[in-house]
Length: 290
Image (tube, rainbow, N blue to C red; front, side, top):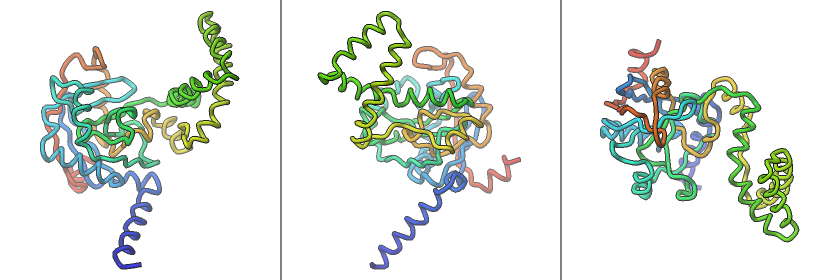
């Protein structure tokens, strides 16, 4: 093995080690001060997502976010930011998708906990490689949940995949009559019977899903601990790249989530990012850390 290959392996090994636990994955050296029309907050950028970190830094340095909108607000959900005034999200994303080279930097310890910052993107059907948009980002508010709510969220996240497989199953001769039963239960508001049959069909398709190499979404112990103690938005985990977190001024973000909204969760009054700038860890500790 030549020296170049050895060096590459050493660098790769060091990177893996740096992301091997929550504390190391969340290491921060650079910060972004966001000045908004509702107040200021500071985002710490994770070292474990270098492409997304550098993209965000470049955006800030090029004043990309100045005078852009907080354009979507869902209380106990997420706040989306970075869209120019008089633009629509879907129109913007569809026009700019092929300009993105931000491939997924998913890390098992970088999850959508309260105050997490992630990059938005087109949905999977239009974006199977899960490339992040280079501009639009979101901040999680979320809420603390118990195990029952977590199980409900898991079911919601897995529902589309399971439904696809059940629809195929019901076309097979052996299972044709079950479709009539489901329709009958639904038409007569027999929810208990419908749910019971659907769960039976779910058990039938899970082995098929696994055989096809697809995995149902599950929460590990780390995620369960975070979402039951801190809160967040677990249904976005491993679908969107979390590349930082709000380290100061989260109360400003929470105040934004309480504004009145209209169609597509758009705030009824314009909320702007006025300015953004990069500061070092030294500057953050000197001027902002208690």
